[in-house]
Image (cartoon, rainbow, N blue to C red; front, side):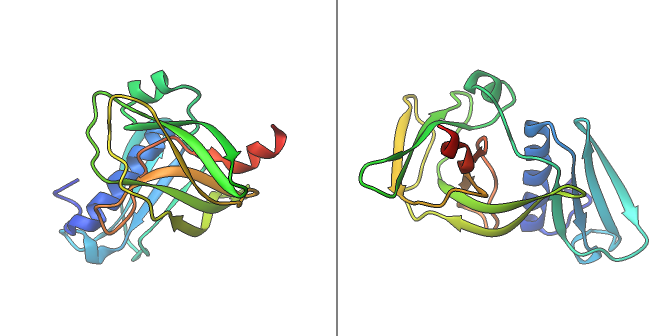
Length: 189
């Protein structure tokens, strides 16, 4: 990846998108415009059935990512076996009213110093997967890996279409570091 993507921040973006697709077991594409490659040729990075391929594009692409699904992992043992740094469970509304609460488990094999809760408004598009229209990173004391699980609570009342996850905060872009939970699932509980 280092030999292809010349810009360090863009390299982090591509790696984060590819890694998330592998964790989630879904197909994804990251298009990269020629300005960010060492040979000034646009690239498409594709993850399909867990395999990464890279193709040179004759036309200049806009830098963007698309994906067919979310990182849906049923239990923390599976998440940690895949190398996911955090696992979110026990998501619920809590007191005081309009508060969202969830438990965070840390992968003992990983070290992350600065993560934060993220809410994304995502729209499911049948032909192209998920499209994020709004991203909110919650101002919260940094979440770091630690041996014991902890409960995070913050004021929030968004549900339908919103997805909860943890992301890194030390880079310009946000890198997913947990499973993703659709908050609309709380409506059925």
